[in-house]
Image (tube, rainbow, N blue to C red):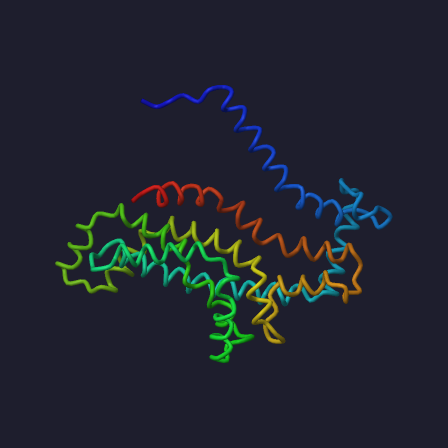
Length: 276
């Protein structure tokens, strides 16, 4: 029998949700307010925008003075390449772990999930030595390597595949379909929801990643996180509002992606993460 939520519990949930929403929105609203305000207002004391034209001028100055558009293009290429590789690797790994029985399968899945408990700071030095030894520093592949083998995406996709009838694969094998034919022509089209869920979540994570891009980027590749760190440093001679405008521009893509696809995130977690 389904338990009914009491009025007091509902109020508590709404209070916590409202406080959390306020905490998350304050930085974004502050950036917007400062950018769309006149220069006579202090950066720390501006809480409401008062000039659309001033905001447009700040954005124009940021585009002209910071090189943010080329850096955004490089970041988009880096994120897109990483996500495509990550989805292919994760989907294949989840397919093997969910649809086939072999010795050590559960142990292997446990090891993959255990990697989620390790922060990057723990293994960043040997990873950097590995990438540098392969002469992949300041390259697209070198930037993408840490984000391709992603345990979270393997978990989400595997949980979804657990609900697919195994008879579907057996019928394809009887018809003479090969291993990769079954994956690419039958299983992969069924993964649309979990793949989209992982794509949106990882887009936001990789777009804002800072530690690894800082270590391996150089003159050829400069993602937005590295560019913004330089703009906000003591050696920058840009005005405060130009810096704020650059932050606003850099934050728009993940916000737009999330607002468009947030429904798929909820559906993907509901249909994938809760099945096993």
